[in-house]
Each structure stands twice: as C-alpha cells, then as structure tokens.
Image 1 (cartoon, rainbow, N blue to C red):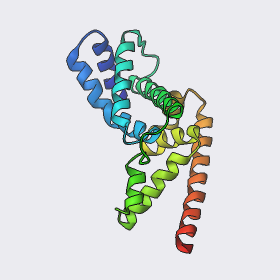
Image 2 (cartoon, one colour):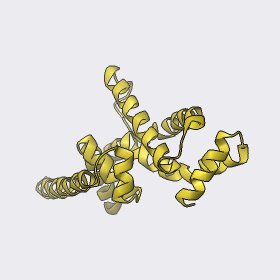
Image 3 (cartoon, rainbow, N blue to C red):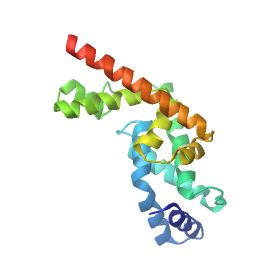
Image 4 (spheres, one colour):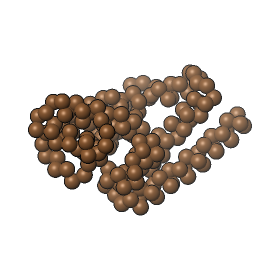
Amino acid sequence: MDDDEITRYAFRAARGDEAAAERFVSGTQRQLHRLLTYLSSPAVAEDLMQETYLRAFGSLPGYEGRSPARMWLLAIAKRVAADHLRSVKRRPLNSLAEDWVAEAERQGAHTPDHGRLVVLRRLVNELEPERREAFVLTQVIGLSYADAAEVCDCAVGTIRSRVFRAREDLTAAMRSNERHASNG
C-alpha cells in the first residue's frame, strides 16, 4: 500500500470510518512492528505497537497531512519506543533474558547462519540510538533517506551520516566478533 493510500485511510479513519481504520492498520503494521522490534526488543514490540496505535488514533483528528500518514505514525512509534526505554532504565529488570536473541545465544539453539544473524541483531541493538534508528529505518524498514529524515526530524545529510557510521560500527564489530570467535 503506498503512502497516498495510507494517508487517505488515515483521514477517513479520523472521520470515524472503521473500515478505513482497519486498512490504515493493516497497511502500516508490518513496518511498524519491524521498527519497534529494533528500537526496543521483540519481547515488547507488540505492546509498543498497541501503544503507538492508541496514541495515533487519539491524535488522528488533529492530523493535518503535512507529511504522509505512515511517516507520522513511525514518528509516533519512535517516541513510544523512547518512552519505553526511559521507563525500563528507571526500573530493574525482572528477568535476565531480555529478549529471544539473548536467550537463543545462551541456549546455543541456532545454526551457524542463524548465529550470525543473532550476533548481527545484538550488534545493531548496541549501536548508538540515533545511528540505530537511522540504520533500521533505511536498511531494515526500507524507508528512503528523505522519509527517515522526516521521521527523525533531522536533515537528510544527517541520516546519511548516521547510516554510514552505523555501517562502519557494524562492520568493525562483526570483524571483532569473528576474531574473538576464532580465538576462543
């Protein structure tokens, strides 16, 4: 579903059209889930999706369409994830297993290819937050640099720089990880 169609559904949903609201959700939920999985963790992504849609539908009557509705929704999701991460830092963790990636690493339940993906996922999560957001939005979600800049409320050049640096960080971390694995 393209941005124009999603935006039309958003405007119709704001006027109370339930079918349009369902189409708005179905047209955005896959990207929203991927973004929230990377900005937080797979364990809480579903809950954060629900919170994002609650905030979005509450704000939908005030949505003016200055940017495509998908970008508007992803910007809300970014704030929801940030709020979640701030609240997690304020309270102690109940479990040592933060998410499935860490658990899979501990259990050794992965094939070599999957293991590399687990490591990459961990390394993406360890990126500086602004670099991780830019990398996930452009390289995982597939947004253009301009769209990612809109979601992050910064210049396109800033997004390009963050993605470039994220790639450098990931490459160096993967090399370091492989050296440690071959020495250990």
